[in-house]
Image (tube, rainbow, N blue to C red; front, top):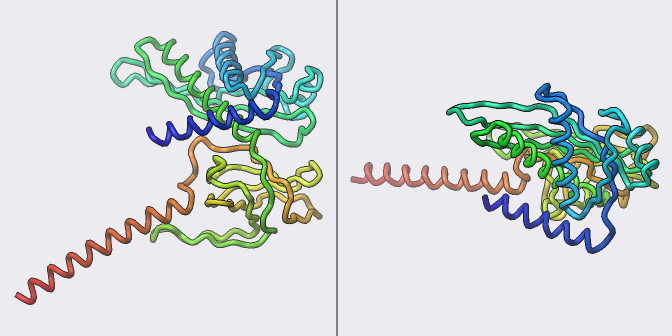
Length: 297
């Protein structure tokens, strides 16, 4: 509950800061695709309305309804074209990945998974992504669906609001890295090529976030965040443009932040593990002390 409140406050401050610093990002919303098989045009319209409202409510985005102008899902180039034709900064689309309904005690409990893509008009090679699940329950299935859709739309908007604002730089050039296991059952993890970047946990970054590295506005590398620390984060490179040399100071853009981190940020993992070891050691000493007392008696 406390984490949720802190996250909400952080997003609020971020929204206010961005809104006061610049004009809203204009977005042409092209529509909803549905892979869930749950509903038809009315359901897609409901999801689209919820997402446009959530985007507009942030005051970070101003949304233009561009539905019916293109078939969804569309590729990045098509989205960038729509953005240019609409004279907006970007174009966005969303896909309903799944809708699950269970009725454990008669009242429907709904889980909706929503995925969105936002492509800048002037940089179609970069696609900001968001994927979230929303939950809803209500005696009426329709209202439960509406609650789940609204929750997923808000979470997707939080993610997009964060990633479009995050810019960092490369602090250290590519090197191999070994992340020590934080639990005695785990193995050390070896990464062939990693870079350290300036974005950290205070930026909202999570393990599993995806980034691109730019040189003169061109994407030269892609990677995934494998360690989040205070002051910096470690990115394992997954794709590097042949012939490219990543340098200190290269621009870093975050394109995806997961709803839930793959693991706790590494320092927190260590802290939790140290506490567990400390507790186990204290318990062992207590048992040993008792044993010595018994022997002495």
